[in-house]
Amino acid sequence: MEDYKTVQYSQTTLTELMIPSYSNFGGKVHGGIILGLMDKVAYACAAKHAGNYCVTVSIDTVNFLAPVEVGELVSLLASVNYVGNSSMVIGIRVQTENVRTKEVKHTNSSYFTMVAMGDDHKPAPVPGLILRSPVEIKRFYEAYHRKELTRYYNSEQARIKNDAEIEEALKLISNERCRIELDNN
Ligand SMILES: CC(C)(COP(=O)(O)OP(=O)(O)OC[C@H]1O[C@@H](n2cnc3c(N)ncnc32)[C@H](O)[C@@H]1OP(=O)(O)O)[C@@H](O)C(=O)NCCC(=O)NCCS
Image 1 (cartoon, helix red, strand yellow):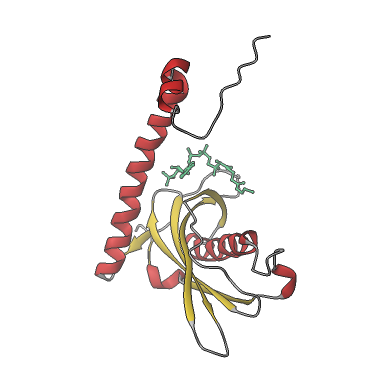
Image 2 (cartoon, protein in one colour; image 1 turned 90 degrees about the vertical axis):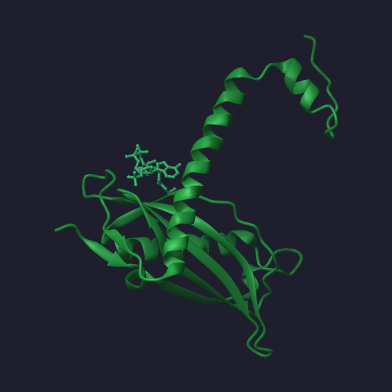
């Protein structure tokens, strides 16, 4: 019988204290530190669902909505939102807590696509997903829809790369902040 797992089975939370060595010249936490933690929690969640070693294959847009301060506790909450054959979309919510004031901030969210790998180092099938709430159904559908949009976006990008003429490009970017200085040699 085909293997299915619940969303809850692999739900993962990673909490880490933001220490001074994580800060940038402005005294806030480096975005790269947060991205690294997001990759870590995505891996833990995906590997638990897959029961296999996984790799990160794609990261959706990450918008930093608010700075993360040194001394705050950062919690990353990860769930499997969608599964394909060997791929899984992991939804990650990042929030910070100021331990003294108890203020909780949502700083960013993103979707990581992870692929399960078999012993032969090739993509391996993952269990299906049991959806037990309207929220889980909505997240699965949203991921499915984003996949369709990405397919369309990628085909448009490929078309522009192959077909865009320089005259057309010059017309479209004429109001942008660039100065054309073609090298005639
Ligand atoms: C992941 C990897 C094995 C996929 O190889 P591939 O030849 O594209 O394999 P497939 O075509 O069989 O794709 C496997 C799955 O990945 C998905 N996938 C591949 N590229 C993708 C992308 N850019 N975005 C989202 N999903 C992608 C496919 O849709 C497929 O999903 P499915 O099995 O659920 O249908 C390969 O791209 C790889 O090794 N990438 C490097 C990963 C890595 O090392 N990450 C860490 C970076 S430091």
